Every structure is written in structure tokens, then in C-alpha cells.
Image (tube, rainbow, N blue to C red; front, top):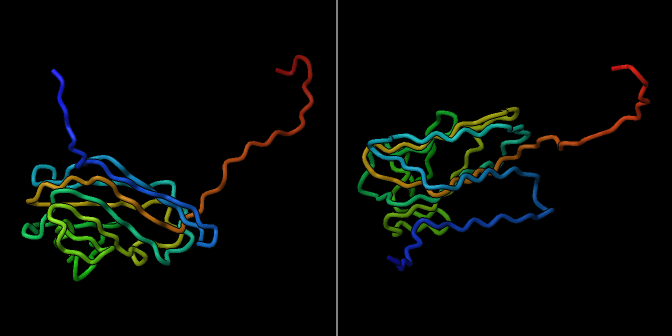
Length: 170
């Protein structure tokens, strides 16, 4: 039987654009509903293949669903083991609390759209980092995580050299 549904609660729109006037940055986008709850109280997202050349203005942001301000049992965002906070909207123990750090709103009710500065939690020369999200009581669905790092990786290039084949050289 056919079902008609207009529930788009799990959708997120992430816009990425290029501005040559801005410094060189690497964006990492992780999109897909992952759960953090009392049953599965952590979510680890490893960032690999980094070459951090500068940590100034490094950021992380996430879109999550079902967080609320009243439940704050071990609700954390960690970078490389360090708990990140963004007071007054996002205290260290309540990362999923229905806030939007872009607009300053604390009236989102079961949705979080938050951006944190992480420049003191990632170092020049780092080749990897670990994002960890935890919740000890609330059921949180992490829709998307975005990081902005000043990381420069070498371009892959294929070069051909002139070689002279010889017969029976194997």
C-alpha cells in the first residue's frame, strides 16, 4: 500500500563555497544520522589524512536532533580528548541543549546548530584528530559534523619519464 509522507526532519542542507580571498582551508563533512544515547553513549569520528599548517580560526560545527536543555548527563563534544564548550549557550556538560550558536537562540527545542572554536585543541603538524560526542541520558541523532582546518595536503600528480624499452629486459 502507498504511504504519503512529508516528514523531512532528517534532512540537512550543507552549503560549501569557495572564496579565493580567504585562507586555504580543508573542510571535512560527515553526514548521516548517527545516534548518541544512554545505550550507545559515544560516537567517535576520526579525522585522518590531515597536515595542519596553522590552527588559527579552526572550527567544528554540528547539526543534531532531539537534544534538550533539561537533560545534561555527560553531554560533551571532545576534540583530541579535550571537552569543548561555547558558553553561555553550550556549557561543557550540555552540548545538546536546543541552541543555535550562529543566531544566539536557545529556543530551538530538540535541535542544535552549534559552531565551536577548536584552535587550541589541534596543533600545527597534526596528521589526525579525534572528534568524540557523548550523551549519558538523552537520545541524540547527530545529522552532520563539519570541521574547518588549515590543512594542506599535497596534490596527487602523475608524471611520466622518458624510458627506452629494450627487448628481452623483463
